[in-house]
Length: 118
Image (cartoon, rainbow, N blue to C red; front, top):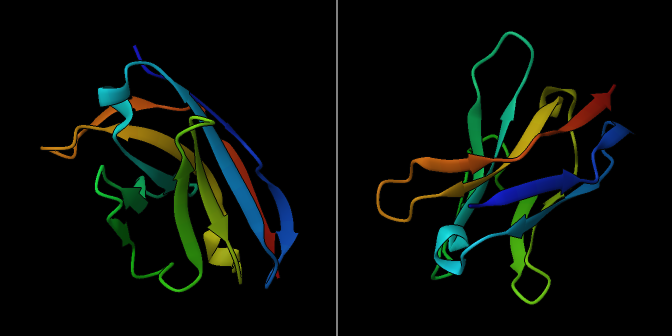
């Protein structure tokens, strides 16, 4: 069973930076492919960034060049470095463990709030 715990959310002014962390536990095969999603009030949850077992990274167009996903396998932690934050980035951010073949989400974290003020 996969467990995911996010940390590092908070409030920042536009142009600032934050780094989210997601500590994960469970079978290694269950956490080979992971990602970050976000959900703003009144909007659907959207994929922000994903990282697969070959270290391939994919980003939503809205965050390309500003966000970076990475992981430290020794610490069993997934990261999302967010730079040049904009008010539109305000959302609840969720860490997810994904099925490497279908891409479907197997487990969600509890979420970390990110608020960007103008």
